[in-house]
Length: 129
Image (tube, rainbow, N blue to C red):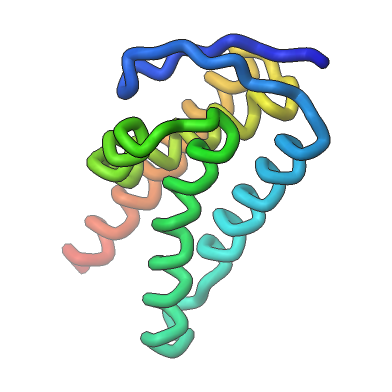
């Protein structure tokens, strides 16, 4: 069984990320939840929006807990993280499970940052109009 070691600075620990079918399935489920939230329309019912956001918030914690087999103390540390940073951590873990190189993962995370900055710029421009 292949594994990749990653260091999680927020937990001050290194972990072996296994490349098993179970871990792949968990990473796909995480990415599916992330995609569902991204597709949620502003026109959706407010209850549906908050249910989806709440479910995703739990997924952001549950995913690394399952993949890295974290204890309750580490789970609580994740829960205290900024949601954006936790999402980046989860994406990093998911892509590691899927066998991407460190460079490919860094490129993906940089693209996420650029997209977010672009979105924030568009919102600011709309507010000034």
